[in-house]
View 1 (cartoon, helix red, strand yellow):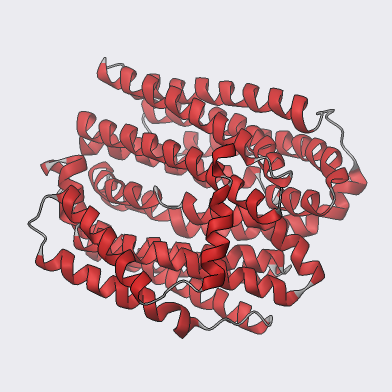
View 2: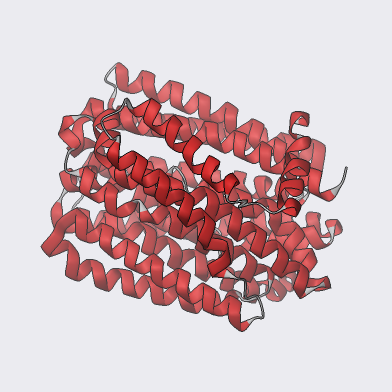
Length: 478
């Protein structure tokens, strides 16, 4: 199979799995919010965010390092996977102990504490499952990850809906997440053992000393990134309470549902980019330009559509009790485009071994976000948190563009932006003047108008159209 067709198969596999998983996750989140109300939903969102802030320390950059190094030489798979499993288990014990000490030092209710314990254990198990998932990616066998993701997501959503419907509460819901994490781990382990590489649980001190420097640089970027993405929920909880957290996360969860798109797209290309950088910087620049353009083409209309239709989406999904979420969703809609673009740059710069400079930029973003939240949340509540997020991510995008330029990875931004912006402007005017139309018809016509104008403007070159045909020609093999 050609490399382009293999990329097409992997993109289709990951996107199919993630599309279904994200859809089911949003369905469950919306049902929790509508059934239990903004205050209890705020508590649930706080617990998820609190655990997520600690979960990043499970990785310390080893997942990305595993993909990069195994993609370069498949013989590294056994050494990297088995050593990293041991490292992750040790980190999990340390981090869970830290969670235990922190939540007992703070004045949380018993329900919140128990939920954090359960979600914390589930996250530890998930972090081990993720090692098998990234091994599938390193071997470019993403269809395994997609199939497992679909199965476990259906189970999680179904059991979660049943638990909430029969009124068993948040503790029972947390136990559902723990059960699914265990099932997910077992399935990933079995497939990895039978199809990819055996797990032998070895620990090599020389391996740890050799890899820790690069891994920590990658991990630091991830830690800082999670801080400026998630710390707003924790700060809102401490400053404004559960109800405001519920309103904010009702909006943010709709936005976060799009986050996997650039991550999965670029993860599919990461093995190729890591290999390409060693051979040719020009080839890496070409992949970067095409990836940036594709993500802009799809991210821009989603951003504009959500901005203009925020009120309709909030009322449709959450109902009248969440009208305070509308303004936050309008602001946070820009998060979609910003993430599509700066995550593209993040993967490209990782491929170019710029993880240390990325860590510095991400650290600056974390400090900026915390500072902005301290000033904006007391005055503007959830809208201040949303503004802080957008300012921070704009800073991150500009810094990453600067780093790419410094590393001879400059691309023609004006040319790339021009036609999508024109097409999106026409689409935006249509939405604005026909906003009273049935929502489903409005979305359908808007998509048709955007891509119709884009193709009339010859937004895709012949080379890009040929590339797209090759990528999706083999999708049926999934």
